[in-house]
Image (cartoon, rainbow, N blue to C red):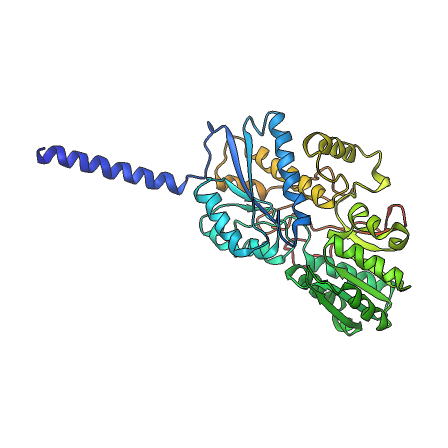
Length: 409
């Protein structure tokens, strides 16, 4: 082989390697001719928080429905969801695999604060959208620091401030006790209560943190009753909420009971506790409760029930977690529709930042999604509701300005 031929081969190889390198940098972007949209997701399908796995299962079912109806802009959605067992180390490992091996366009709706925080730097460094995370932690909506990570639901601290404002307005100077899940979620909501009360946080006379697998909930409730407090704020999962409601009633303790949104489900928390024992419970919500008789004739809930029958028949129609997944998937589908034929990651983020008064069908009336370059918390409205033994009754209007940390709000 002469030197000229060898030189031409070497140049050709260098050009090929350069092209491959450039392709690898943009590998996750999808061309107009690509016939699928690859979406990555992590859920606690096993482990202590597996009751929230219904979020991912409903999202998978939603995209099955979308695909059966022709996909999004002619492309089918491939929803790739893995079990991270609520472990941040596992979450990072699985996310790397989804990006580097499965070639996902974006990560969507992964559950939990620790896992989402663990993968945030990896995704932002590679400019991969981390959209509509299933966590209310305020650190997951900071566009100035992490411009590829966007939340979805109201923040836990903002929810806590709503409860604090309600207490100040209707039960001033009453003694308060709190029972909260000892994780980032529980701490955030507790901090929100303290923020909202300000100098009056001294009224919180007892605060007990419990582990998700705590075997001593009955003892905790007994201690809280003995404190003489008139207000109980609970922050935890639905199964524990149901247990606490039942225990308090059995102890003939009837405080003003404030229940966090994630557990405010008639079907998964209040009915198991006993509707009579649950009467009077107060919460702040942004989604309709599919087990609330008030929505029996609502077209959106009827569509939800039909969806569950056809695409997720093994699921619980009354699951607030499943409904959450359905609504979040609706939101992502809207973003992808807005993308048209441009499925670059840059355009996905551009469209995610351009939602104006968008309302997934199962959000409460008056609650809408708005995003912008400086607003990475799509849902910033909630509504106080009280259970009357049959249905959730609204308390006042939609709350607009409890989210003072959101730019432009």
